Amino acid sequence: QVQLVESGGGLVQAGGSLRLSCAASGRTFNNYAMGWFRQAPGKEREFVATLNWSGGSTYYADSVKGRFTISRDNAKNTVYLQMNSLKPEDTAVYYCALGSGGAITTIQQMYDYWGQGTQVTVSS
Image 1 (cartoon, rainbow, N blue to C red):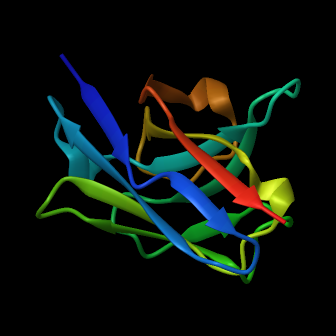
Image 2 (image 1 turned 120 degrees about the vertical axis):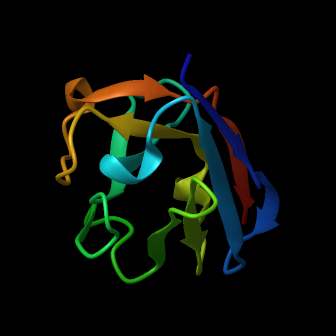
């Protein structure tokens, strides 16, 4: 049974920072790509960031490029999302996901498992 547990969400003022964590269990974590997605109220879930099995290849949505950094610690089975210069439009529930393969992908259908989500609220 694969389990992904996100943490680190909360309320922050615009311009502030948060670091999300996602701890994985139940699968050989370091063989698979990981991704972060988000869903704002009334909107569809959207891609945020992804990295490959080793962490050597990353890709970001244009809306977060230069502000967010995705990383992973395979020894701890954990993926992170460092979010800086946060904006009110970053407000959403953030989900981590474990890929079906080792390469980066922005396609939600290419992720096999999802966490329960963590709320990020950015006030203006």
